[in-house]
Length: 402
Ligand code: MLT
Image 1 (cartoon, rainbow, N blue to C red):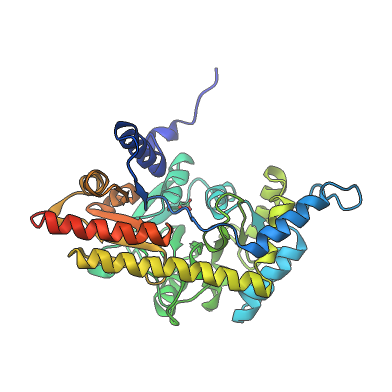
Image 2 (cartoon, rainbow, N blue to C red):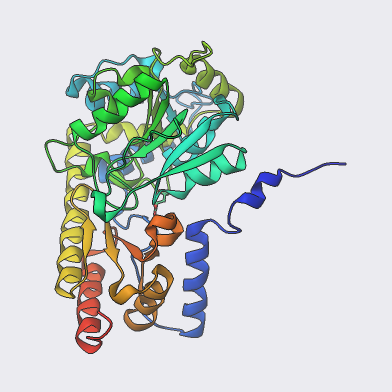
């Protein structure tokens, strides 16, 4: 008699973005032909960078010839990509890591969920609220206790270290999804010091690192002294170079990272990956490595500039409409307070029905996200301009709402 994992009863029936997408599909079915602008899920719209596409084509053709064919690669990734990451993302910032501390994967989301395989079910896990739902849902699925750290406008969305319950594992995502805010060196150092003092582990999601504009915002948690003994960092090529479909990211597990009961997490993660993962696709890793060439770097920079101009446009449009707006400076996400005491889903519905704009309801990211919605800057310039125009128009016609 088999039994299912009854921890699934502790999570909502649908993943946040599937629930939103269902609601939007229903709207589109009921209103055929309407031009809906999607600023909901953080999926990019610019195509994959040219440098990466050229390499994809080359690597794919090599797969067609016996002499150049490549089969299974190392589970932790091909050395050509690992070396490019070490040199450009770390050594260039004065961070020393070795090649066996980098693990290439099919994206940050999988690793952020899978990392639980090497952690005890008895750990208490802290997540910020609002939060990227993957941290909460995967830990509830595994049966771990999850506590939340409120991030509110009143504390500038900066999480405060917990004092009543000391968590064993802490997820931090900066630049933040969903609030779009960032942490300075000093603010992140507070967390690193706390984790070292309490022997906690920080799981640092750095998927939006490329969007950082402020000079006092760290690009990697390892820029903070001591972080290698308490933090794992997750990175992704999805939002920087249009890899949401291709899938590639990487995770850094320093060798210094040893659990309270004496396990080297690097050894465990390698063991886990070798057992459950055959490595990211070779052609996709070749494409990712091309992002570190001079042309690749330039194209990534242009993509980020494009989306950040969209973010500024959105912020302006929303502010002109009289709305209170946060984020969107070091991040492609803009966090918006719903007007007139509306809750997240009511504002979502108003935006969809009156403006034909899809946002993500803030409450889907946690209780503290209630009465907010999140916009992404990932749509095209034309659609972003049009979205800002529609929101302004809404405010003109409905002074009592906005
Ligand atoms: C988001 O919209 O929060 C992200 O696109 C989700 C993801 O990266 O998995």
